[in-house]
Amino acid sequence: MASIAEKSAQATALLAWFAQHQRQLPWRNRPSPYAVLVSELMLQQTRVETVIDYFTRWMARWPTVDALAQASESDVLALWTGLGYYNRARNLHAAAKAVIAQHDGVMPRDAESLRQLPGLGPYTVGAVRSIAFGEPAALVDGNVARVLARWTAFAGDPNAPRGRTQVWQLAEAWLDVPEPRADPSSWNQALMELGATVCTPRSPRCATCPVATHCQANALGLQALIPPVRQKAAAQLVRAAYAVIVGEVDLQSGVADADPCVVLGRRPADVRWAGLWEPPGVEGLDCLDVLNARLRGMGLEPGSPLGPIVHILTHRRYEVLIVPVRCPVDQLPSLAAFGYAETRIQTRSQALGKESGLSRLAQKLVETVV
Ligand code: SF4
Image 1 (cartoon, rainbow, N blue to C red):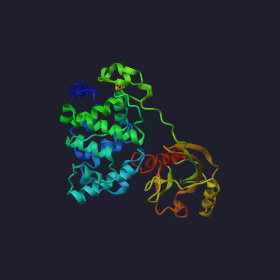
Image 2 (tube, rainbow, N blue to C red; image 1 turned 45 degrees about the vertical axis):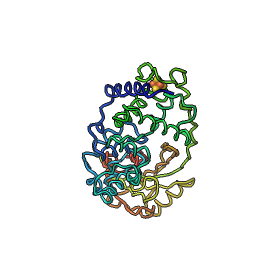
Image 3 (tube, helix red, strand yellow; image 1 turned 120 degrees about the vertical axis):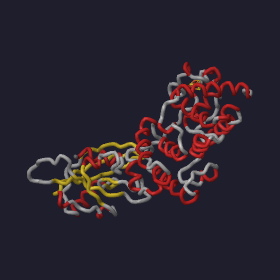
Image 4 (cartoon, helix red, strand yellow; image 1 turned 180 degrees about the vertical axis):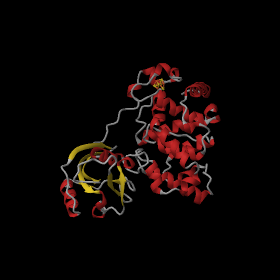
């Protein structure tokens, strides 16, 4: 077991490395508690490079908790278009409303109050407390778990429930060391940065690592075995068929509209991609027959199906047939027959735009046909 003096030396080395090598990211520039919350929720399951543009647009549009609380859910989901895991957007919106309603618009700094906000788990609570308020609060995400596990040649699986608890204890113990305790914001970000840029899952760059001389996995040559590789659960197969109904200015001429219209329905609450827009679709083994029957019942003639295209989510694999349908632009139908409470018509460029409110799958469907 390392003494406090030894741990101080290790912490000093890591903090010095972070001060020199950290990436310049928009949420690192004297972040408000609100900015920390936005960035941390966006960064969950998502690469830093992807988040930068979303974070910048979000903060320009809703720079304060108050501004976000007053936004409509459809605008919030629209800005999140393409980022995936849309519950994060709904939770951010709900958390902003709760801060206004319960905390007079001021983000709380104590753990208990933060835990009550929608979407905030132990990691996010630790991030807001340490990064925004400088509180000595630990955090453990995948990067931190890997760094601490390798650093100590951890024998268990830091991503299994028991191992995760033990790694949290390691992270908390570091905050008893004077240097991390004096600057928990930099300390936690340094651990995450090391995991993201140096102590990466497959090819850790130990030769350039600031804690290499203290790292037990490095000393023992165990980097590839810590943490142990986890077996992925098999993805559930979902078969689906969607109709992309395209408005034609003149069906007879065959002259293509440069920016044709498509018909979209809004997904109901409490389902995957709730509140997002999509071409009408059906899931299930007989999806194509059901879809075509519904289209004919609406007086539309289905075209020959395209695909299937494959769309992968974390636990699901979608195999999707796409049925093109041509319809005079002044006769585009409502999608009530498909169970959508709201229908709207958008041009191709609107549907594929950055803030369209379509899921990535829905955008793929439109792209395939028009
Ligand atoms: S020495 Fe290698 S394994 Fe150890 S923390 Fe640094 S990068 Fe990770």
